[in-house]
Length: 419
Image 1 (spheres, rainbow, N blue to C red):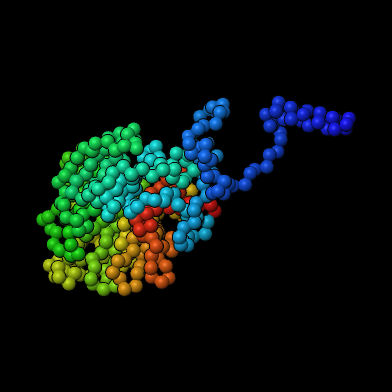
Image 2 (image 1 turned 30 degrees about the vertical axis):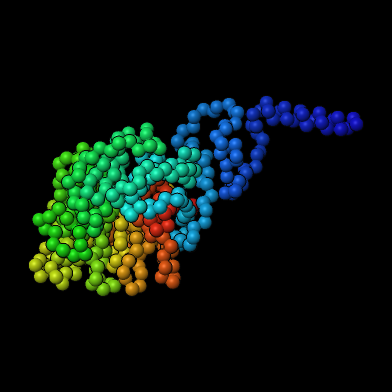
């Protein structure tokens, strides 16, 4: 009995000592990374009842990034092959027809669609790099493919007009009444869906695709990349001879525009290539419909103007890969060799006898010269020629990881580097 009392007294003494020291000097084993089952919310958390606790000091953004583990992602329906050290997982599921993306400074990811007609806001409240909620803000819209965020407002491009939603994050989950800033764009559905972004000059860039496979666009509003002021006024043409651009970005050092362009169809499996174009100044003509890929004279229109008259692509891409969204990599997570290089979402061919694309490609630059074009992520297209997903757009997160939208799988993936 005396020995039991001595042992109990010793244990109480140790506990009091640890408490008085605040844990200082005591080695605590780091718990293993929780599995998905362990991170599922308890019934109390689901019902919104918060546990009683002393409110700690508000952590800084850097402390959150360092202390918050990435949630364990669900397995993808197919294997995605990446360079060594890179990982991929779901950022958000249940985002039907997810297309173009725009990230607000507060971390809200806005996502447009083409066929679904929906507009989404994807929210990651606990900053674990997994979406906590997908909000459907709008339904029945006219192909709201393009989204851009600027000065607290969300800009959405439907086929024939551009809308602005003021102070949108204060209204979530509701959608405020839109302001129609410009409704002068053509209403043609063929190549009418739009990708939009604000350039370093503070103007909103809006492309207008050709309403055809191949047709004359000179003297018309088609086949161009335009720009407008944030209030929708002062429409200007920046580039022409562009069949259908659904992705562009500006070089982080030079501020010069680079954009993807989809080549025409029905000239065979391997002709013409899609294009990555470089437009360092306004007024350049990239050849459509007379010349494709810089060297392919169109059988119907090529006799009117030779390829030598036009600006050739900075890089011919794969034939019919349907190159869409692109971004320069400006983060710090990936190895230095990826800095200021271009990632392109290749949506995938729709009528090629042997499918191609369905991947993320990497274009390597030295200065403003392309020195390499290679596959970065693939596996959405299976060996049997069937695809379970189709990448559409890429978007960087503040930690340097990269999001990829997929309109076929209705999902958004996150690619990160662990080294």
